[in-house]
Length: 203
Image 1: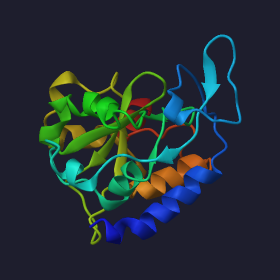
Image 2: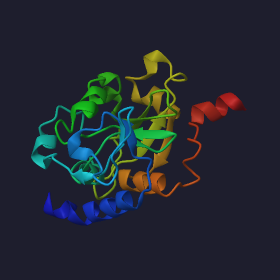
Image 3: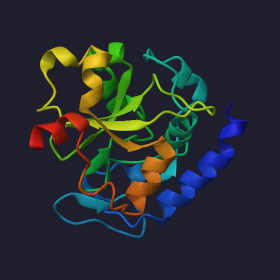
Image 4: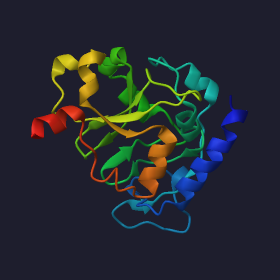
């Protein structure tokens, strides 16, 4: 699988290398510090992408509700980083020292697993989950990426796919497509789209 991911990694690497940032945070570990930026007296410093320490085989051993799609595996195994902040969307930090620690905190919330969704980030600065829909796959094994407004979804709906589906706002057909849209400021993603249930509520 690792060899087949190389073309995807190359595309993801180009997207992230071209993304201008912001890449500024407090308490940046030495392994991620930008050597060209000394930082300031308040502890803030610029960080940079460095090679990932995530192993594909280790990902396969994670207790997840389904197989991760190839483009997301490629993303996890390309670069280590701090939080990737796109404004309305945030992908969690993957520092070299503990690359899956922040993701495991998201994955520990199993409330959506029964419905086939796996959280991989957050939106709207309020914790709205960005999720892979592991029940829908194309011929390459890729899955759509969706967004839930957690304040709008009834509590009883999270574990019931049939009830939860109208609350899922589709962001992109694959993770790679989402990353491309985020790094290139796709107007279809900003502001975050509404789900069918939210649109019905507004009419």
